[in-house]
Image (cartoon, rainbow, N blue to C red; front, side, top):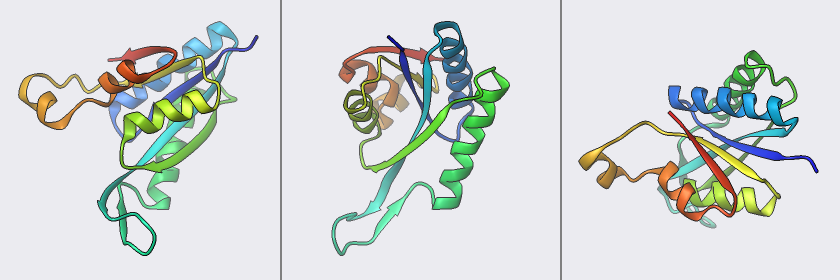
Length: 140
C-alpha cells in the first residue's frame, strides 16, 4: 500500500521547511507527495455574482506551486504533484482535501507565533492537527 502525503504550501519560509521535510518523508517511505496551496478568500462575497478577492492571482499561485516543486526536487523528490483550491478557511480546506483524496499524512509549516498574535490571528497548523483524520507533522 502506497502512502500518500499532502504538504500544505504558501509563500513563506516555513512552507519551504515543510516541503523539504515532506520530500524527505516521501523518499524514505516511497510515498507519493502532493504539494497543496489554498488560495484564501480574503475579501468580497466570493459567491455567485459577488466580487471575490483572493490572496494570490493566478500568476502568483503558479509561482507558489512552482517554488514548492523546486524545493521538493532539491530535497530529492522529483515526482511531486501540485494541486490547489480556493477557500475562506485554509485549515478546513486542507483537511477536507486530504480526507476526500485518501491522504495518509499531512505536513504543514508553522510560523511559530506565540501569545497574543496566535490568539488574534489563529493558527492553520493548530487547526489542521485538531481536525485531521490522519497523522499530521508540523515543521518548524
